[in-house]
Amino acid sequence: MSAASGSVAPIHGLHHFAWRCRDAEETRHFYEDILGLPLAHVIKADTVPSTGEHCPYVHVFFQMRDGSYIAFFDLGDNEAAAPSPNTPAWVNHIALRMKTIEEVRDAKARLEAAGIDVVGVTDHGFVHSIYFFDPNGIRLELTTETLSDREAAEFKAAAHGDLAAWTREKAGRAKAPAA
Image (tube, rainbow, N blue to C red; front, side, top):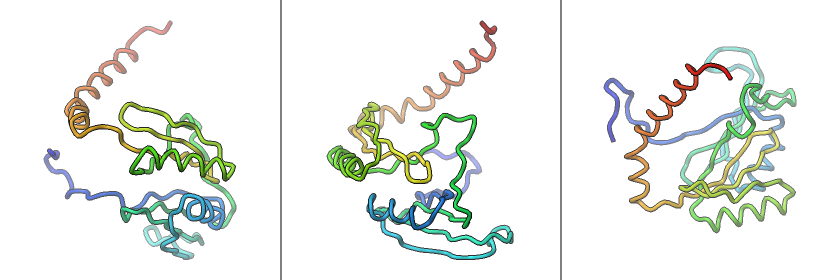
């Protein structure tokens, strides 16, 4: 794997992804009781350590099997993060990896039994996924890779060329006269 000259030290993986939640207990129920991610850590504070700003909050962490976390801030005002007005709801999401397609299908059945609307199983050509929303309106994807090592290597080898082609196509559309 090549790294750009002057890049930071190697990143070894995700520690946590954090988002705002409406209610920490409602969020705990969903992530722990429904998705099976144990509540692993809670921070309660009145001051934000990185900014010094006064803002009472609780920060809750749910652990995944690889040791990474999904985390949430409850700011005590019963408000979830507002969706981005310039972005379709399907764009911003977090994808959580499962080992097999059978696990994804089982998760779909369990989620639907809990009254959660699920889209999929969707075949993306390299992963199979299901999609649903948590109580805060955050779109989640449960996914499993379906590629062989050879196919994954082929995708990786083509990635820079594919991105360059997209960049040229997008630039061409920007220059094209409006219809």
